[in-house]
Length: 468
Image 1 (tube, rainbow, N blue to C red):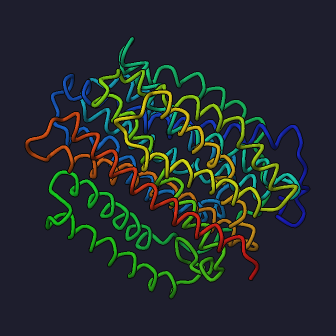
Image 2: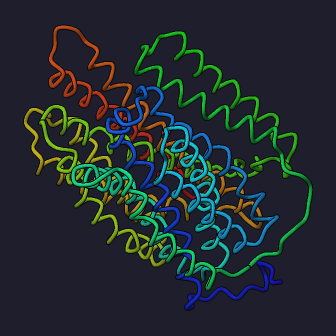
């Protein structure tokens, strides 16, 4: 078996298919997550469940991700990459079949949780393959391709879900994905190879993993209660306080366990890595917040269909697809500073336009164009932020860094959606105002939060690209 030193880093006929195979699984996992949000009214009617119950299709899925993704560094050290890939895609296929044929809501929920296990294993795998096997001169390009596959999924999901719901049954969402899963399975089994030594070391830190999972769930639930009970409710404050307390506890706990922890705290000693980590969290927070606000606003205030509302995001998604590899290539040739600062400048401009231009004067075309400016910035920041941050780590710490990036990326997306939804929901609860106008006011407030996020992103990227 080869180790990291002996492995020949070459951009050959097996590396790119390996990235594509693991990337397809990651892409599908995120697409299903965002597409299912458009099916909630239909599912509530068909299965006779409440809003709070149907939301567990997303909340439960995210909880599983938060439990699985932090363990990616441990899984990578203990099992072969191909073994993990086969396990991930097999679980996802089983979950997809269960969802597609679910006769009752409990089977649908169980299928989503099983899909979550598969996605949780797959998401970090693609970037681990790139970090271990890609030639250093092509690292930015391949990180851009990998990021493209995952970053465009939140925009594709609502459009895909809206299209299916408008013309077909929600069950077709799962049926359509099966051929892609089979293709990914064939490509992965044929091309994925081992580039690092498998180590049979100490047992897994189940306690630390449970602490992280409960911490993340508490954070998400605090956002959920903010929308339903209010920002100063006992539930909102209680769950938020619990999340903070668990996070602090885990920092001390993991610091004492060292490399035996779920995620080795040594990675946070590098300031530029930490800044990159916060930056990626912020990017994903902003991306999914925008992905919620725009379709929601278009449907409620402008009375557009779910399909038309989703279409607002499609041109930006297409631009992201084209430019993500370009952004990575620029980093390969010019270094991280130029593409990262170019990208963050575009996201600041787009966020400012979203916030400062009154929504009453906006149109489908103007929102589409501004979102394209945002995705232009995203294409130069997301993948390069991760590549830049991981570049400051050495040896096996890269696997821990990758686990941290993927964990915080998922958490950022989940929290962005939850907080944006809470802001809009609180505005909608206002008395003596129409739902249309209150949604407009809530959307404007959410865009204000997104603009504040762009300022945090700017500061983090400046610090992450400075010399020590």
